[in-house]
Length: 161
Ligand SMILES: [Zn+2]
Image 1 (spheres, helix red, strand yellow):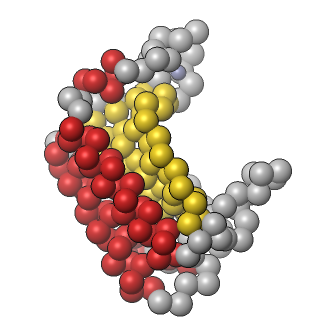
Image 2 (cartoon, rainbow, N blue to C red):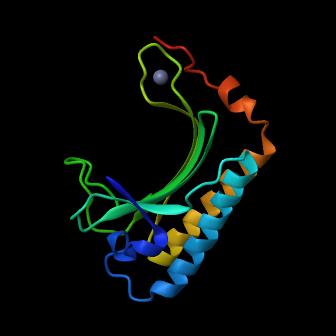
């Protein structure tokens, strides 16, 4: 998987039939700025929105991450997935997800533990972009409202077996 900055990738990886690129791009840039502001607040500059692109694939997801001391704030938009084959299928709806998670602290590392999540489905590219913007705002609000140490303290899976 390759991380490609928003400005260097192709929005049609996420929105295959996109005609009017500019309005969607404008909203996504605002979303990227919100996550970058959160990253700045946390003291670790972020990369904004990036495509998670498999070289050669006709599709990609788009995500932004702000991370500090093993706590991650992430927003992600992608094509819907075929529930049986677990591969992307034709939109709509686009799936937008927001996640605040902490790094697993168990002996058998399972990856990440989710603390708070949101998700929504969207019928048009512009609606999906606005969903990303809304989640980016939620991440910023949560990340600046809560003391940073509280996320780890709220991890109910902490040191699980
Ligand atoms: Zn774990």
